[in-house]
Image 1 (cartoon, helix red, strand yellow):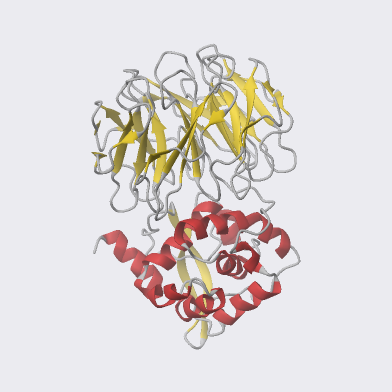
Image 2: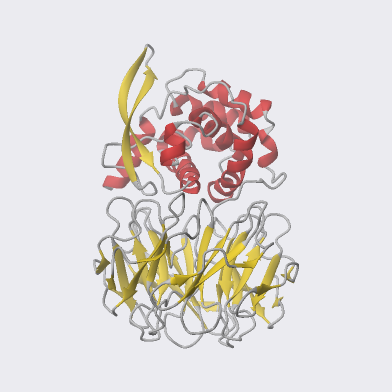
Amino acid sequence: MTARALAAGLAAALSIMFASAGAAHADTPGYINSVAGHAQAEKAEFTVPASVSIAQAILESRSGESKLAREDNNQHGLKCAAADRPGPIAIRCRAYQTQECTPGCHTVTAYFRVFANVRDSFRDHGRLLTSSPSYAHALPYRNDPDRFAREIGKVYATDGSYGEKVVKLMKDHNLYRFDSGGPPPSGPAELIISSGNTDFTGDGKEDIATFTRGSTADAYVAASTGSGFSGTSQKWHDWFAAGSEIPLTGDFNGDGKADVATFTRGTTADVFVALSTGSGFSGTSVKWHDWFAMGSEIPAVGDFNGDNKDDIAVFTRGDAADVYVALSTGSSFSGTSLKWHDFFAAGAEIPAIGDFNGDGKDDIATFTRGATADVYVALSTGSSFSGTSLKWHDWFAASSEIPAIGDFNGDGKDDIVTFTRGDTADVYVALSDGGKFTGTTVKWHDWFAMGGEVPGVGDFNGDGKDDIITFTRGPAADVYVATSTGSGFTGTSQKWHDWFAYEGEIPAPAVL
């Protein structure tokens, strides 16, 4: 057993956290709405009932009010196996005082997992329950949420009534509605598809950016030299992508330099852009659209009409699965209800952007992942996306792997890549022939983006072939690159930066 697998097993064998929050709080309905999308994504990926996950999160986090939830994004009280063993998804561990009852209750110091975002907390919860032998006895009851809750309750906490508390919350708040889809949650689910260009200086080599978000909302850039990224504290903007806004990159005015956009989503649904000058981003409150990517919809960037100016798209996903596009005029995005596809990237599928047939117009793809691992593509006509059930691959990005897009062999057609991460850290590529993706088990790297690192794609040395990048984030904040040879990625420990995208910052290019 690997060290990380052992750590996961030890974490499961330990009692995870005494449920000190037996009663729901006044803001519990709001908390449910804010996390329901994450729980439904967890169900789609790991088949854990969303009702159980939400109820546990209510219990463990005191409806999001606990310090562990607020500061460390840990919604389920997940422990580390040891002070330096956060597991494959969490970024580090932090010590807390907590109570355990075995059977007498007493205070202990325990190490809990710190997550970069709430979505990772839910993913780690699903991974733990479905991969640890400690919960194997509960898995046959995943279609019976009450029984499943009672079974995991025997192991999950030292509180003997834990399972019944979870079931009571499920019933009191009718959380079962989220197991079958139910109404879309009002709280935005965080899925960041960094599909746009990141050549901020316009020299033909893609650079990296990081967004601190929150109350500081700074944006930093490190420019590529072709063999490294230069600059640690090069602040290109001091107020962009505040709070939990979604930052994306692209060349929105067509001047050859990548710019930044931020999507407020929620009930405001504004889109702001700051243009690159080559050494900074200009503009703070320049609104390019006032109603796009509302609620928890997923925004993306691409040149969909082939005019060399990047546009914006949004995927509603869920049951509607609509795709809307607003085209760039060079100074704004035009169009609010221009539907380019009426059924694409349904449920919790992962959408992506790329020019898969090499005609100069960006197309859309969706990865079903899970047990089916299908990949579908709809090609751009310049005014819509054509094709609903055009399967371009029938086994790629299985389970919870992280898919991404890039032209890895430099033939002008975008290909697909998947990162297994975790303990295996393999990277597979399937190349586009213009009508499908070829290759299932073609491994281009056997040790890249391990654990919970954040991978991405870009042409960092400017040779016309896209390379891969991984951000360790957390306290190390290292950045590694493996460059493409056209048939593989070369380099395992090629560190291109040793202090960038610290802790939970949002790097670009990346898929989170």
